[in-house]
Image (cartoon, rainbow, N blue to C red; front, side, top):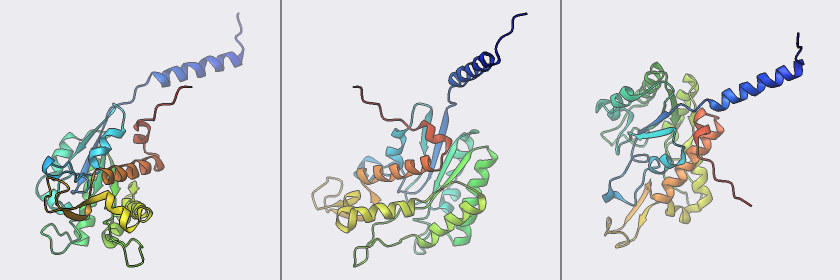
Length: 256
């Protein structure tokens, strides 16, 4: 009887395992974005205003589809009341992701979209629970910082209460958290009070045909700002080691 060395058997088995692993193709996944105007797709008449969800779609390989359901002016409450959440649930499949970023419109008492702190938390929990029931992957994101500096040039918090609520829900529900508020504050501090204007819709009169009177907007991003925010989100996806990180397009290696 022919005896095969144990070492050879192990080598063959490991080789077959590697071949099997390499032959497994990544299952297509969809990333759903829900939130407000800082993420949403903009109409042409709003340019150069750009939601960070717009450049975000270009950073993934062909196995990832991004559907941006974010809408200008929406809070967690109005997003639900207007039945904008149902289409996401209808299309959500096991393994898909739902990125959840609200707060800008929830936190302002003078807005019709205002949501109490208790309801804000409850709505975030509902998004998480509904996503998990469909075997999807919820990811919470704190609202991106507004551009605001004090007299000494230090960036100020603009979402302190509602960002803290997101962090609390993420901890309680054991959900991955992308703290875009803190990350974007740090980015704005790097840019500084004056240079940070280049990330937002700051236009002089007659500088852009969409805004003949000019515009000074410290909430909404231009194309550069949106790309910077998207890259912060991508960096956190990698840091959190989400499976989605394996699908981010890798830069091509330079040939000698």
